[in-house]
Length: 367
Image 1 (tube, rainbow, N blue to C red):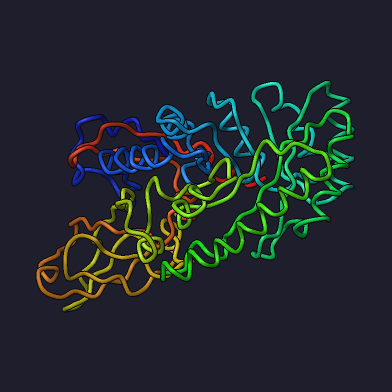
Image 2: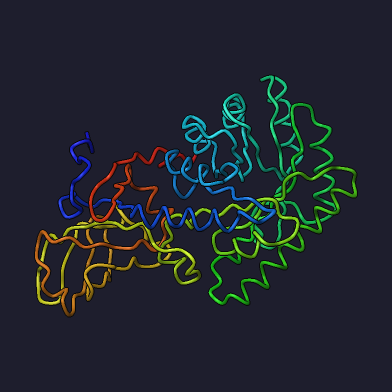
């Protein structure tokens, strides 16, 4: 059985066993504070996405810095967050089926729970379950603002579903949600801002349609890390669902330079089979490549060019040619969320020294 309590506070980075998922604490803390400062004078507030950090410890740090609560992708994540003391949770997806709905109702006894819907049949199922459990569940209509994934069409269709929710016992209509996920990774800022604004106009136009139907709209939830500055300043938006800003990753660094990268994976050279080549113990089972190849941040001159299940293939130049078996390499994930999900623990580092080991309690909670 894998144990981590042998890695005591004070252990230098180079003494850690690998692969190890590292957090640079000063960088992460600065990222959290910077995002908190942005929202201090905005009508909109921050509701960070738990699907990035997957840790109640880190979610509490975000709430302590000023976030109003968190959002989750799945019921399993919400269970971990609620058990970890988070009391305001919005599941930004549809919760479908008796098993998941029963778990959602149990969560209503631990936290102020809200969920997204886009179908009247699901509304009926949630209503029946809430009445049977004796709880009250907050509900938002997800609006398709251009991503074309889940969601009701803007305007009248959303207003009609909102009316169904408002008259359903056990449910409280809270508002609307729209995620401009098709915009967050657009590198050109002007294009990103224009497309995001078009999505937000649809969302706020839908708010007006719902209000015209006689229903108050308490929540207008939207946004992500790549659009936080646009969505967070847009009139009528009440909360932004940014998540990746806490750590950043290689893909987001191409889009946004407001925050620094706090998450890396430490790996060890296990072979120098020939000149200019090194093999390390970092493979697809310990780092993801769904958004491109990860980037070596230390040492200079090393380039990760291939991943198999358990091995990383590096090409070396310059000072990296001096690497030998046993030396450590630090790698920036191209996609933080999917890399975090395959690790069991964070190794929290301060100035190159281990400060704490934190379980990634939400890892694998995709049900």
